[in-house]
Image 1 (cartoon, rainbow, N blue to C red):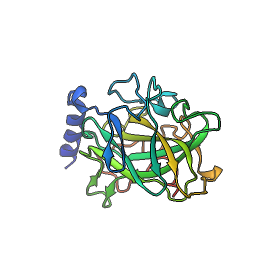
Image 2 (image 1 turned 90 degrees about the vertical axis):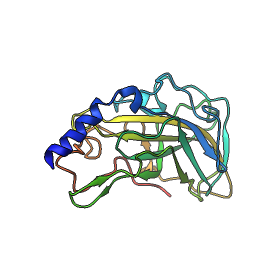
Image 3 (image 1 turned 30 degrees about the horizontal axis):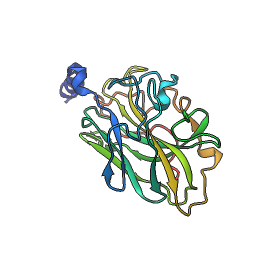
Image 4 (image 1 turned 45 degrees about the vertical axis):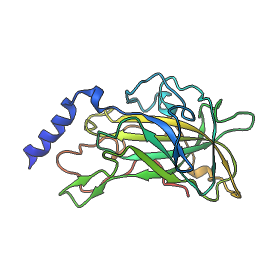
Length: 232
């Protein structure tokens, strides 16, 4: 079993990297997958991951710039992101949102400061050390519900898939990141408390047990999702 698990890990590393990478290119709004980068901030990173958790690239990816549009979605509705290629590497998904400050829009705001709150996540399924499964495997999209009580306004919505195939060494977790531009409307009147807000970069040190982990052997008995609790 140990040899088999180690071999699986080695195979994941040796697969040509260009085939293993993927990008969150489109927002899904009103059950419609919008055009690539119509509402998602384009970046200069092509399909490469971010690996330095203290880098400003962690916010919305390297070289992120305004997308041409801002999508509208009602609080309590389902939205999401679509990928250009299905997820290839094992690991979790986190989704964060950030309220755009007064005087800016979702297009102009870069996401700086302690403004982000988690709204969704998808982790691992473990069974005490026999297997570990990743529901994100082979997904071509991920959807979630905007908190129904969320106050109206412009927001950034940020998704990350964290690839853990080489994460047994510090700094080797791979973050596949995009930020969408969104205007939330509806009857919501609530904002998350300051205790739910984090800065990105800043939310991770890289030493979290969900980021610095050997997923191949010994098979983890549990998995701890990195980042704060979901605010809903």
